[in-house]
Structure formats: structure tokens, C-alpha cells
Length: 312
Image (cartoon, rainbow, N blue to C red; front, side, top):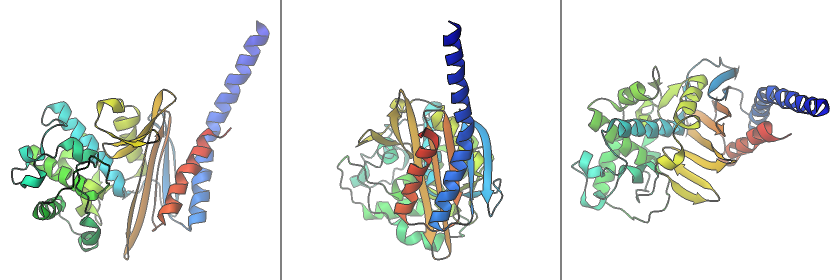
């Protein structure tokens, strides 16, 4: 019996030691990825079970606010979830019930369709207009909504087609049902103290949030890692066990869930990227960097982080 206890104690000690190594491995892995990508400025926040473990910055202070880019979509998704919880809307609410000027071709769109990019809105007008909105103080989700409505076209297939336009429409929905600015409504509900970017804030509901990596990590843990199970939220099955819903990708994993997403703002006058992940409601990290990075290089970061956390 004593031998069994000693073996168990050794195993627990080894597990704890390995867990203590993980933050260092994540930091080293991210720094190695930055070096390989030619990135000099970035920051990282590491969490465990929703609690901040450490932060680190390169060429910047880790407490400085950074561009969240498309990680902003998860804030919009969580904000809609909060409004559903308040009884203000439901996931089945039709777009026309909130925006009565919705054209006939889009009348059947629901909030669930927009949250999962499955309603057939797929021509992303924002890719051409966003450079003109850099530094613009006013949100532009209303402008995008007008563009979509003037187009008045829909190829409904039920298939996932990622586009900023869906989350611009959700920004307009939130502003209408709360009768306040989108950024105010969502800051109050899901990211208290956060603000939109002085540079990219015009993209607010799809790419405009701005905060320290530790603050986003705290939000991510509240909204996803420690929040309602994904089965309670609208999502679309992308195959291979991967789903998308509420502005984030997720998959079931060992009786729990992993959540992740990336973001990028790449223009001639600025470059920024971001990445958030939570594994099994246990370890999580949020990273941001100031550079334009090739998409294939960006996606390599996911594998680097998985190796840092799970490799023996």
C-alpha cells in the first residue's frame, strides 16, 4: 500500500511539475513563432481555469491595449447571448423584426444565421471599405448594413461562409434593440472597461475592439471556457469535429471543449494580429502582435501552442 502511495505521489508531483512548465513553454513557443515570422512587437497572456497566470511583452508592455481584430466577433456573439438571456431577443429572432427596412430577399434571416455565417450573406463589402475607415471615430456597422440591404441578394445554402458583413449586421441589431451605441451596450454586458480602437474602432462589431491581452483572456474564459456549453448556443458543423458559433471556432475534446479564433488587420498603414484559445476549460492564452503576417504562418501558431501545452 505504501508503495502504491509513493507511486501516486511521484505521479502527482510529475504532473504538477509539468503544469508549472507549461507557461514557460507557451511563452517560449510564442517567441519562437514570432522570431520565425519576423515579428518584433507582441504580447501574451496565459490563464488557467479562467485565472490569469502570467503576461509577457516583447517590444511593448503586456498591459498596453492592442487590436483584437476578428476576436471582436466573439464579443459580439457573447453580447447577443447576453441579450437573449435578458429576453430582449432570441436566436430565432428574424432580422426584419429588428430592422424593419430589411429587404424581402433577407427577411427570413435570423440572428442564428448571422452568428454562424450560414444565412447566405457572403459578399464581403468591408474588404474594400475598411482602409478608408481607419481612424474614423464613428462605428460603420450601419453603413455596411445599408450596403447589404441595397444589394438585396441572398444565395441561401445553409453553408458556412465567413464574412464581416454578418457581424456588422449584428452590430446594427444590438444598437437598435438596446437603443444605444453597440460599443456601449456590449462593454456594459460582456467587456466592462474595454473600448474600441482609436485606429480600427469603426469596425467595432466585427473587428474594432481594443484592450490588453489579459483583459481579453478574462473575457474569453468567462464567455466560453467557463461559460455555457456550446450545445446551448447556435453553431454550424464544419466537419472533422470543428464547429463555429458566437464568433469562435470550437470542438469537443476529452469530455470538454476547445475554443479558438484568429484575427488580422493588414493595411498599407498598419498591421496587427491576434489569437485566442482555451483548452478544456483549463489552460488558455491570448496573444497579439503588430505586423502583417501571411495566413499560413498565422495558422502555424495553433500547432506551436498545442505542442507547448500537450507534448510530454
